Length: 346
Image (cartoon, rainbow, N blue to C red; front, side):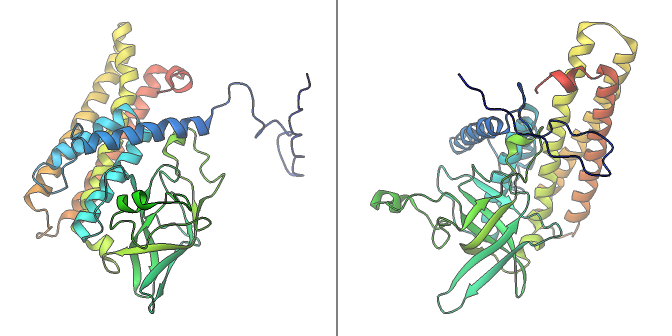
């Protein structure tokens, strides 16, 4: 039996402080990002089915039950933050399509919202006026669910400003038959990204803790797309701010999960310092939860943002929840040490 030798490390740069090591060379017990991505995709698919079956409720923002929506996001995030990243995107996409009059999603479709606009190349939309069609080209960063979503709402630059487009991502086969055609919906018309028009870019999502969220950059090359709303409609709608509060609900769910390690430590042994940290964490989680509950009630009272306070409310709540989550992380780390961080895969 022969064994392949691992690749030799690259020589150290002339000004390097450390000698070359084995960085980048797979080692026994290394984290398997592909496996994490596959496991998260399976749970995401199951969650979408659960939503469609009514077992997991996500009322639309402003429908009178926004609190239930935020509670569901928090609950999913507390169980699995990577899955929550995908579920939040899917449910946000459904809300956006409903608000902007976009194509109606079909059962089994898994949607993402790819609207990050960091500095760089970005995505450009081209309009063929004669044919009445649109295509997207360029690099979209932070595309969560790049391998597991069937469709995505993608922001792109146009001559009139940023605009939102629906793109079909699952490429199907060249031999799609009548049965496949019957399953297609308005969301697929003119949006089927054929071979070579859409590719996740390898190596653009090295995050370990959130590897399962599958958030690399993706490259479009004349990918067919369907406009959803007019230019700037995506950011001008009231739901843009409402959805931002929903993201904060996911942050809070993650903080609750982290706090679980401290609760378990406090239950195992009596320690006044651990108890003090636990009390501080409880205050943070309670305060953040109250802020989300109040935001949900205000959204339901003014879903169309007639009073103009949606953006300010979203910024306040997101800042408050983010600060609470940061303090929870600090308290849990100080109270439990490196154990949970190094050895608890949750």
